Picture 1 (spheres, protein in one colour):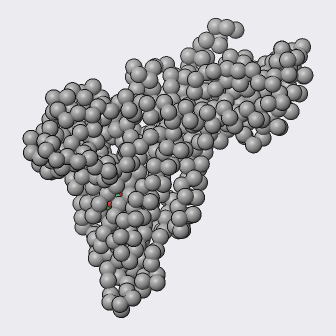
Picture 2: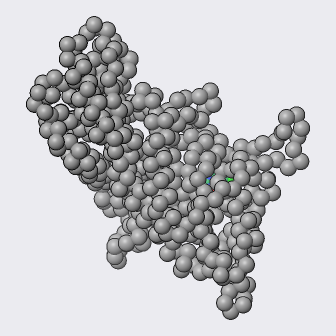
Picture 3: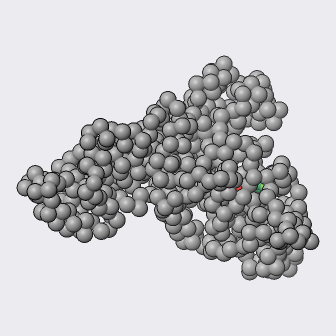
Amino acid sequence: MANNEDEKKEQIGITVKKDEDFSEWYTQLLQKAELIEYTEVSGCYVLRPRLYSIWEIAQNYFDNLIKKDGVTNAYFPLFIPESYLQREASHIKGFSPEVAWVTHAGQTKMAEKLAIRPTSETIMYPSYKKWIRSYKDLPLRINQWCNVVRWEFKNPVPLLRSREFLWQEGHTVFATKEGAWEEVLQILDFYADLFENLYAIPVLKGIKSEKEKFAGADATTSVETFLPSGKAIQGATSHLLGQNFAKAFDITYTDKDEKKKHAWQNSWGFSTRSLGMLIMFHSDDKGLVLPPRLASNKVVVVPIFFEKNKDVVLKKAKELVRQLEEFNPIFDNRDEYTPGWKYNEWELKGIPLRIEFGPRDLEKKQVMIVRRDNGKKEAVPFKDIKKKIPLLLEDMQKSLFNKAKKFLKDSTAETTSWKEIEKAIKDKKLVKTIWCEEAECEDLMKDRTDGAKILNMPFKQPDLKGEKCPQCGKPAKKQIYFAKSY
Ligand code: 86X
């Protein structure tokens, strides 16, 4: 029996350590925790119910934030006529090899081929042109939740770099640049709120360099973070599109002064990539660790019984499960597995709290509650359970965030010496440094570090008078975050 169990455990648990073989750890975790299923199509994955439920909670949270702010949802078609896609040249430049096309219906070749949306600007903005007449029609603020396809050729990483993913894309129109910019920052704050308060992931807010911004935008802002794999990653972006698309799509309005003017636009998005960040950030050698707010099942109840006391233990356990309804408990009353086996399974699957409960606990009128994040176990009297669970969940949410903040801080090297920057990048650190703001120098920094790039530049900049750019020695203009990234 014991041997059998050991064998099964080996197949079911993760067989490598997170800090020894990160990418193998990640792919085993995704499959063994029943989050992702691979398919025959490279770069395309099934999001299984345990993962999709996390996405639904994140969606709901962000959807509420933007709706309270006045954004409404709509849905635009998946297919984009070729002629539409090409209307704004700068936005497609560099991306066109990734566009997937529909060319046939059955055996019949189509008159105009249709792109599967890689992003929806060019299908949305012809409608916007029709809907906007006067300043009274503005602001127009629409969001859509959908899938997009980008046929990338870099090696795919589930959730982080997949060929199809889910996201929200907000596309908004304003009468003034000031109104638009105010929204860019508001939405960026919503993304920071989402990552920090829901995902328990600290982020760095800032503005992209000229080279790294979206080519179709006047300015790109982002939230970025740093993962335990030693690479930085962009979590979400919020763009000030300026009048670039308004000019390409002829989106104009008649202002109060009766003059016709081009509108000001923004776009912003976050995607299922955030789920990859979440899993990589908090999970451990035993499996998935979820911030409780993202867990749809917050507790699992594991009754401990033998044949002779099975009935009384299960009766009380059932009663408990009924009381804990609001935490959407899993009740693991399976006969054919030992409690130890069940503990491993629910740890692998990331249930935040485990409630153990046996004959001796029944006598003492208590249960044992075990936290997934730190393994701490405590006895809780029956009468206190309902009060105690929310406290433990909140504490776990907070402590995961604090641990993540400490990780980000410890992973950051602040320096203005080029030698130290090179060393820090080699040591898989995120570098906080300063820069002359010249694109040529930015290229050299990338070359000399084997591909590290500027993530973004904090909004609040220090006074850099007299400071020199570490790479070229010219006067420094901007404080930056610099790292290798996904
Ligand atoms: C850039 C810009 C923007 C709305 C966002 O970042 C947030 C949500 N869109 C997306 N981008 C492209 O424009 C793009 C275009 C084509 Cl044609 C493509 F194949 C891939 C793309 N990838 C990104």
